[in-house]
Amino acid sequence: MKNFQNCNIIFEKQFGQKARSVFFAPGRINLIGEHTDYNGGRVFPCALTFGTYALARKNDSKRIRLYSMNFPENGIVEFTLADLDYNTIHDWANYPKGMIRYIIETGCQIDAGIDILFYGEIPNGAGLSSSASIEMVMGVLLKGLFDLNLDPIDLVKIGKKVENQFMGVNSGIMDQFVIGLGKANYGILLDCQTLKYSYAPIKLDNYDIIIMNTNKRRELADSKYNERRSECEAALVRLQTQVAIKSLGELDENTFDKYKRVIANEIWIKRAKHAVLENARTIKAAEALARGDLIKFGQLVNESHISLRDDYQVTGKELDTLVEAAWRQPGVIGARMTGAGFGGCAIGFVEKAQRERFILQVGEFYNNTIGYEASFYIANIGDGAKEITKDVM
Ligand code: GLA
Image (cartoon, rainbow, N blue to C red):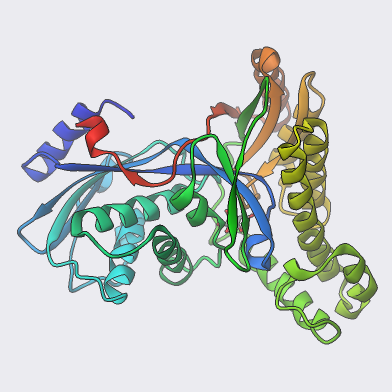
């Protein structure tokens, strides 16, 4: 974390007293299993070591006062516990506000005001889930300060509800789930239909995961995310006239091939094909990783990108430029976009010895092709949302 004492000095300057507790929630990458969560399929994400910090202290005023070191120009956003409606001018603060509102709606008692300072390390709109990170840090903060009887999965579901109903983005459960339940050095293989999950050790030998940021901002709400979701739902409705399924995630490739004509819309067929095959790839990729077959894992990662590019059509020039440049570099076993797409980030599995060269070559090619720079970070796999007061104070 950025120097914690400095953050607390800023806290004191804003709120008049020092914070007493500190909470953290990570960002995330998804290794494979993209646009499968809301289709009832598998995802295979992991939590990162960087994320969102929140310093907090209860106050006596029954007012919620929020300050973000990332948006100092917005100053303190303030509201009362009696007014928890979405408010456009509250901007980023609607995420924590939504969490308070929906947690109270579960019957939990939040009977005091709170002062909170946020410090986020996740680049905004980069597709590394800065929004789910702020939701989940707020979840563990409220649970910690008010000793709430909510388990991590309750907080995950509340976070998703904030995203869907408070913010109006029809996203699936992957981001909140991995940010809530992630574990250092493990990925989570999650079945989004049943919420059954298992932790899978991420052993990549002498390979790093390098995050490549297109620096093209991705706004879920105004992207085509919701449109893709509706296209899949439309395909599902038509398939349901032939097969008894609740989601596309229940279909195997052969059954899909047998019945796909009933969808009768070429675009919807492509979208559904991605959802079905990506789900199968995710299972195979997790198996390949478990048996240490990194080459097979990398091939599946590449196939995932191709499917997202050609069938789901959510990549775009920036992501394709990065990923295709990554494929051409020595020591790369696989690369693909990660997250929703339409800009944001890609990931590459790169031999450690080639790391510098990779960043240089891909970076140069991207800059020459797109006209501005990409950013690169090494991904380390960290823990899910938690209180860290004892570690830093
Ligand atoms: C975003 C959403 C997730 C998931 C991914 C695509 O990150 O928040 O729920 O749908 O896109 O896999």
